[in-house]
Length: 243
Image (cartoon, rainbow, N blue to C red; front, side, top):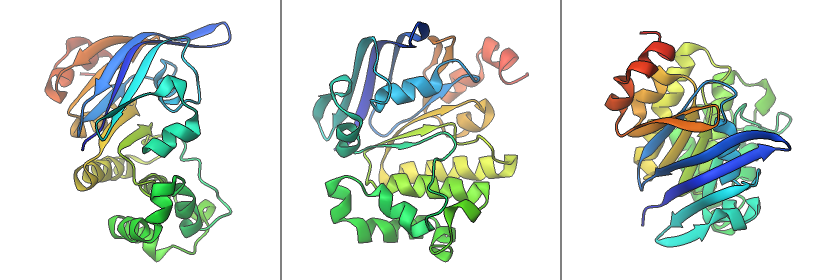
Protein backbone atom coordinates (compact mmCIF):
# COMPACT_ATOMS: atom_id res chain seq x y z
CA UNK A 1 0.00 0.00 0.00
CA UNK A 2 1.16 3.53 -0.77
CA UNK A 3 2.16 6.01 1.90
CA UNK A 4 1.47 9.70 2.50
CA UNK A 5 2.30 12.55 4.84
CA UNK A 6 0.07 15.34 6.21
CA UNK A 7 1.27 18.44 8.05
CA UNK A 8 -1.29 20.58 9.86
CA UNK A 9 -0.68 23.99 11.46
CA UNK A 10 2.96 23.40 12.39
CA UNK A 11 4.86 26.07 14.31
CA UNK A 12 8.56 25.70 15.11
CA UNK A 13 11.28 27.85 16.61
CA UNK A 14 14.92 27.86 17.66
CA UNK A 15 14.72 29.38 21.11
CA UNK A 16 13.07 32.78 20.76
CA UNK A 17 13.46 32.79 16.96
CA UNK A 18 10.24 31.67 15.31
CA UNK A 19 10.92 29.85 12.04
CA UNK A 20 7.65 28.17 11.02
CA UNK A 21 4.15 29.51 11.53
CA UNK A 22 0.98 27.57 10.78
CA UNK A 23 2.49 25.42 8.01
CA UNK A 24 -0.07 23.09 6.43
CA UNK A 25 0.68 20.83 3.46
CA UNK A 26 0.49 17.24 2.35
CA UNK A 27 2.04 14.70 -0.01
CA UNK A 28 -0.43 12.10 -1.22
CA UNK A 29 0.53 8.51 -2.11
CA UNK A 30 2.92 8.35 -5.05
CA UNK A 31 3.27 12.12 -5.46
CA UNK A 32 6.37 14.24 -5.84
CA UNK A 33 5.58 17.42 -3.91
CA UNK A 34 8.09 20.27 -3.89
CA UNK A 35 8.56 22.83 -1.14
CA UNK A 36 9.96 25.88 -2.88
CA UNK A 37 11.65 28.91 -1.39
CA UNK A 38 14.93 30.75 -1.08
CA UNK A 39 17.42 30.19 1.74
CA UNK A 40 16.30 31.05 5.27
CA UNK A 41 12.56 30.65 4.77
CA UNK A 42 12.12 27.44 6.78
CA UNK A 43 12.32 24.59 4.26
CA UNK A 44 15.02 22.63 6.08
CA UNK A 45 13.41 23.26 9.47
CA UNK A 46 10.17 21.70 8.23
CA UNK A 47 12.05 18.65 6.97
CA UNK A 48 13.74 18.37 10.38
CA UNK A 49 10.34 18.60 12.08
CA UNK A 50 9.09 15.66 10.01
CA UNK A 51 12.15 13.62 11.01
CA UNK A 52 11.83 14.46 14.71
CA UNK A 53 15.12 16.38 14.73
CA UNK A 54 13.27 19.61 15.58
CA UNK A 55 10.12 19.40 17.72
CA UNK A 56 7.19 21.58 16.59
CA UNK A 57 5.74 23.87 19.23
CA UNK A 58 2.27 23.43 17.71
CA UNK A 59 0.50 21.38 15.04
CA UNK A 60 0.46 17.77 13.85
CA UNK A 61 2.57 15.74 11.45
CA UNK A 62 0.87 12.50 10.40
CA UNK A 63 2.25 9.76 8.18
CA UNK A 64 0.19 6.97 6.68
CA UNK A 65 2.44 3.95 6.16
CA UNK A 66 0.79 0.99 4.44
CA UNK A 67 -2.61 2.22 5.61
CA UNK A 68 -1.61 2.76 9.25
CA UNK A 69 -1.63 6.31 10.68
CA UNK A 70 1.31 7.51 12.78
CA UNK A 71 1.67 10.79 14.69
CA UNK A 72 5.31 11.66 14.01
CA UNK A 73 5.39 14.42 16.64
CA UNK A 74 5.17 11.73 19.33
CA UNK A 75 7.98 9.57 17.91
CA UNK A 76 11.76 9.70 18.12
CA UNK A 77 13.87 10.11 15.00
CA UNK A 78 14.86 6.45 15.24
CA UNK A 79 11.21 5.39 15.35
CA UNK A 80 10.39 7.63 12.37
CA UNK A 81 13.20 6.09 10.34
CA UNK A 82 12.02 2.64 11.36
CA UNK A 83 8.62 3.40 9.78
CA UNK A 84 10.36 3.76 6.41
CA UNK A 85 10.77 7.52 6.18
CA UNK A 86 14.21 8.32 4.74
CA UNK A 87 16.02 11.64 4.52
CA UNK A 88 18.56 12.77 1.95
CA UNK A 89 19.98 15.72 3.92
CA UNK A 90 21.23 19.02 2.61
CA UNK A 91 24.98 18.79 2.01
CA UNK A 92 24.73 14.98 1.70
CA UNK A 93 26.27 14.27 5.17
CA UNK A 94 28.28 11.24 4.10
CA UNK A 95 31.06 9.55 6.04
CA UNK A 96 34.05 10.71 3.97
CA UNK A 97 36.57 8.21 5.37
CA UNK A 98 34.32 5.22 4.73
CA UNK A 99 33.95 3.53 1.35
CA UNK A 100 30.94 3.79 -0.92
CA UNK A 101 29.76 0.34 0.11
CA UNK A 102 30.24 1.10 3.82
CA UNK A 103 28.20 4.30 3.50
CA UNK A 104 25.44 2.37 1.76
CA UNK A 105 25.44 -0.34 4.42
CA UNK A 106 24.89 2.33 7.09
CA UNK A 107 21.69 3.30 5.29
CA UNK A 108 20.17 -0.12 6.05
CA UNK A 109 19.33 0.97 9.58
CA UNK A 110 15.88 -0.39 10.27
CA UNK A 111 15.38 -4.14 10.85
CA UNK A 112 13.30 -4.58 7.69
CA UNK A 113 16.10 -3.06 5.61
CA UNK A 114 18.84 -5.08 7.32
CA UNK A 115 17.03 -8.27 6.39
CA UNK A 116 17.03 -7.15 2.74
CA UNK A 117 20.51 -5.60 2.65
CA UNK A 118 21.93 -7.74 -0.16
CA UNK A 119 18.81 -7.28 -2.30
CA UNK A 120 18.74 -3.51 -1.69
CA UNK A 121 22.46 -3.17 -2.35
CA UNK A 122 22.09 -4.93 -5.70
CA UNK A 123 19.14 -2.66 -6.56
CA UNK A 124 21.16 0.39 -5.56
CA UNK A 125 24.09 -0.60 -7.77
CA UNK A 126 21.67 -1.27 -10.63
CA UNK A 127 20.16 2.20 -10.18
CA UNK A 128 23.56 3.89 -9.79
CA UNK A 129 26.13 1.94 -11.86
CA UNK A 130 28.82 4.51 -11.01
CA UNK A 131 28.54 3.52 -7.35
CA UNK A 132 29.05 -0.13 -8.27
CA UNK A 133 32.22 0.83 -10.14
CA UNK A 134 33.51 2.75 -7.11
CA UNK A 135 32.22 0.61 -4.28
CA UNK A 136 35.67 0.49 -2.63
CA UNK A 137 36.45 4.18 -3.06
CA UNK A 138 36.37 6.54 -0.08
CA UNK A 139 33.27 8.73 -0.20
CA UNK A 140 35.29 11.88 0.54
CA UNK A 141 37.36 11.46 -2.63
CA UNK A 142 34.33 11.45 -4.95
CA UNK A 143 32.97 14.36 -6.97
CA UNK A 144 29.97 16.35 -5.77
CA UNK A 145 27.66 14.64 -8.25
CA UNK A 146 28.88 11.20 -7.24
CA UNK A 147 28.42 12.05 -3.58
CA UNK A 148 24.83 13.10 -4.26
CA UNK A 149 24.23 9.75 -5.96
CA UNK A 150 25.66 8.06 -2.87
CA UNK A 151 23.38 10.08 -0.56
CA UNK A 152 20.36 9.03 -2.63
CA UNK A 153 21.57 5.44 -2.68
CA UNK A 154 22.04 5.41 1.09
CA UNK A 155 18.42 6.51 1.50
CA UNK A 156 17.29 3.70 -0.82
CA UNK A 157 19.09 1.18 1.38
CA UNK A 158 16.47 1.94 4.03
CA UNK A 159 13.80 0.48 1.70
CA UNK A 160 11.78 3.69 2.25
CA UNK A 161 8.09 4.32 1.80
CA UNK A 162 8.45 8.12 1.99
CA UNK A 163 11.56 9.96 0.79
CA UNK A 164 12.42 13.45 2.06
CA UNK A 165 15.04 15.28 0.00
CA UNK A 166 16.53 18.54 1.27
CA UNK A 167 18.14 20.86 -1.28
CA UNK A 168 19.60 18.26 -3.69
CA UNK A 169 20.98 20.98 -6.00
CA UNK A 170 23.24 22.63 -3.39
CA UNK A 171 26.89 22.68 -4.44
CA UNK A 172 26.36 21.03 -7.82
CA UNK A 173 27.12 22.34 -11.30
CA UNK A 174 23.99 23.00 -13.42
CA UNK A 175 24.39 19.88 -15.55
CA UNK A 176 24.73 17.74 -12.40
CA UNK A 177 21.64 19.38 -10.89
CA UNK A 178 19.66 18.37 -13.97
CA UNK A 179 20.93 14.78 -13.80
CA UNK A 180 20.17 14.56 -10.09
CA UNK A 181 16.60 15.80 -10.58
CA UNK A 182 16.11 13.28 -13.39
CA UNK A 183 17.39 10.50 -11.13
CA UNK A 184 14.94 11.49 -8.37
CA UNK A 185 12.09 11.16 -10.85
CA UNK A 186 13.38 7.75 -11.90
CA UNK A 187 13.59 6.60 -8.28
CA UNK A 188 10.02 7.71 -7.56
CA UNK A 189 8.69 5.76 -10.51
CA UNK A 190 10.84 2.67 -10.02
CA UNK A 191 10.20 2.25 -6.30
CA UNK A 192 6.71 3.83 -6.14
CA UNK A 193 7.85 6.36 -3.55
CA UNK A 194 6.07 9.35 -2.09
CA UNK A 195 8.53 12.26 -2.23
CA UNK A 196 8.64 15.62 -0.47
CA UNK A 197 11.54 17.67 -1.82
CA UNK A 198 12.71 21.03 -0.47
CA UNK A 199 14.47 22.98 -3.21
CA UNK A 200 15.38 26.55 -4.12
CA UNK A 201 16.05 25.82 -7.79
CA UNK A 202 12.50 26.40 -9.02
CA UNK A 203 13.14 25.61 -12.67
CA UNK A 204 14.64 22.19 -11.98
CA UNK A 205 12.16 21.28 -9.24
CA UNK A 206 9.16 22.07 -11.43
CA UNK A 207 10.40 19.58 -14.05
CA UNK A 208 9.43 16.63 -11.85
CA UNK A 209 6.84 18.08 -9.45
CA UNK A 210 3.26 16.87 -9.41
CA UNK A 211 2.45 19.97 -7.38
CA UNK A 212 4.01 22.12 -4.69
CA UNK A 213 4.09 24.92 -2.18
CA UNK A 214 6.03 28.15 -1.82
CA UNK A 215 7.22 29.01 1.68
CA UNK A 216 8.10 32.61 2.57
CA UNK A 217 9.25 33.69 6.04
CA UNK A 218 8.05 30.41 7.55
CA UNK A 219 4.54 30.53 6.10
CA UNK A 220 2.99 28.85 3.07
CA UNK A 221 2.56 31.78 0.67
CA UNK A 222 1.17 29.84 -2.29
CA UNK A 223 -0.09 26.34 -3.05
CA UNK A 224 0.13 25.15 -6.63
CA UNK A 225 -2.21 22.28 -7.43
CA UNK A 226 -0.01 21.37 -10.39
CA UNK A 227 3.45 22.19 -11.70
CA UNK A 228 1.78 24.26 -14.40
CA UNK A 229 -0.09 26.32 -11.82
CA UNK A 230 3.16 26.98 -9.96
CA UNK A 231 4.94 27.92 -13.17
CA UNK A 232 2.20 30.32 -14.24
CA UNK A 233 1.87 32.18 -10.95
CA UNK A 234 2.86 35.82 -11.56
CA UNK A 235 4.65 36.32 -8.25
CA UNK A 236 6.69 33.15 -8.66
CA UNK A 237 7.63 34.02 -12.22
CA UNK A 238 8.72 37.51 -11.21
CA UNK A 239 10.59 36.91 -7.98
CA UNK A 240 11.89 33.36 -8.30
CA UNK A 241 12.13 32.54 -12.00
CA UNK A 242 13.18 35.99 -13.20
CA UNK A 243 10.57 35.99 -15.97
